[in-house]
Amino acid sequence: METDVRTYESIKEWKDKNIASFLNDTDSLNKFHDQVMSKVFDLAISRVNKGSPPCEFSWFITGSGGRCEQGVISDQDHGLIYEISNVENDIFFKKLGVEVSYGLFIVGYPYCQGNVMSSNSLWSKSMLEWKEQLLKWMEDESWDAIRYLQIFYDARVLTGRNSYVEELKMIIYEYQLKHRTVLKRFMENVTHVKNVIGPLGQILVEQHGLYQGSVNLKYAAFLPYVNAIRLLSIKEGVYETSTLDRMNCLKQTKGYSRALKNCEDNFLTLLKYRLTLFQVESYTDTHYLNIESLHKEQRKEIKRILKDGKKLHDYMIALIEKGC
Image 1 (cartoon, rainbow, N blue to C red):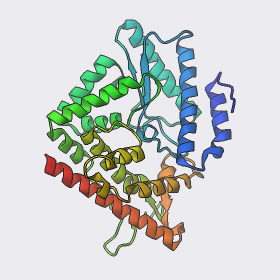
Image 2 (cartoon, rainbow, N blue to C red):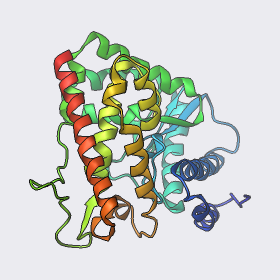
Image 3 (cartoon, rainbow, N blue to C red):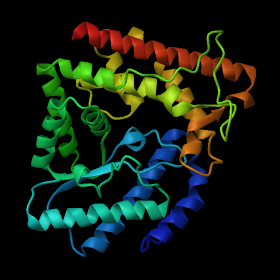
Image 4 (cartoon, one colour):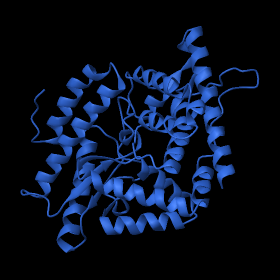
């Protein structure tokens, strides 16, 4: 597939024309998103500087993109790490961060509501500044600091040096080994799970509005798995980003195989359901699955996945509380 990459509009046209060919499975769709975002990044660099970047760097994506779990529409979650801070480098990467965020928006990736983007100085720093920031976040007791650490742990390099992100993740792992209460703070940050199973075992759907008859898959189904597996990965020093890859690594570590028995199949099924949500108009639309439109066996399947996700989440909480 060839495309004119001289403008963001031409990349968007190419993306919109070809994305339907990649809806058969999540892996193909996410590789397509990677390809689109890489084209945007390359064009952004050429617009900021006709030559090469002034020093080595990593451009990473995080969130569902970092975990290779994007749906048809995905918002922006990304950041920059560059080798060293000086006037020239700081100016260049500040301009690049603004440009790439703008380019992604034009191509069809909505701006991140939480401002986790390279255009935000919080997510664009030199390697030394990143190390200092991670340590500051780990010493901080605020809810935001812990949330930022979890977001960073999902980082996956799309362009540049892979070693920068892995080195920074190692700092998080080694710090929590020496300060075990950090894990408890991580756990407390993700304790709440949206309960959509009623007292009689029924799935509680939205009763009014645009999503009547639906459940929010992101909060009710995906996050219990994603959050639990991420935290166990931080605990064990697993640096992979996708939830499925993390599960595979954890099953080879200590006694996790029993606790994760059905989790891989459940998560794969959730990803397949997300792929059915392609006739959507907004990023929010990709989160809602209409339960009332499913047949009986599918509703039973979703209910089992929801219950197993809650069990995994409770297992993680008990394990961290015991260890701390």
